[in-house]
Length: 311
Image (cartoon, rainbow, N blue to C red):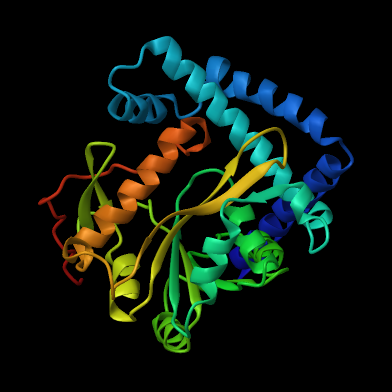
């Protein structure tokens, strides 16, 4: 009981610190935040070398012809993007709303996006990755009148988790817990809801193995199963930075419809490889906007960890 109280006190203290930090950021100009992001990027890349080995390994595999200087520049640009993205989240709800979003977000082929999302009374599965500003992407879709449901593991800090979900739910982006929500997901898809998922998360040895940047990567089978099992068109979407702070373009990279798609993507592995290829194409347009610091490539196909025996 006492340890629980201590943990709650620690969690709330961290939450207060985060809220104070957000308030401080909101007193600054976006241009100032951008300069700070550049400085922090240099610090994390050249001095502290945060997650240096992971980033270096990922970039070596993704761009085998690159030189050390190029990889270092890309690493610094990635950190700059991530720090700037974090500050942008603090400004999003204040600056981007129903009457102002056109100042910050350009929609690539809006007619195509609308025609697909409005077509028929069918569920849809939207897939994106740790690329660009996927938080803004979900926020913007709901702002455009297309509410979505996303699946994520709750953060360990319940106060920060509630705060982040409150931000996401402002315009109609609703979060579902990763565990225990299967019946709710089935009900939503049966009713024609739109599911928004990150498709570049490692799924472990039991996942669906595909190629991503020419390297074996494990992906969650559920992403493809939601589309194939519920006759739901799959859309690979992006929200990519095209200028300075809060200057983005959102659009659809590709569409796969279980009713009309070619045979090779009408099974779990084929569809998983298809959307992974779409995500790879997006990353190659602006590689500095991808999260090279996360362990996308883990394990090896065909190797499974032995199950733990019950005590």
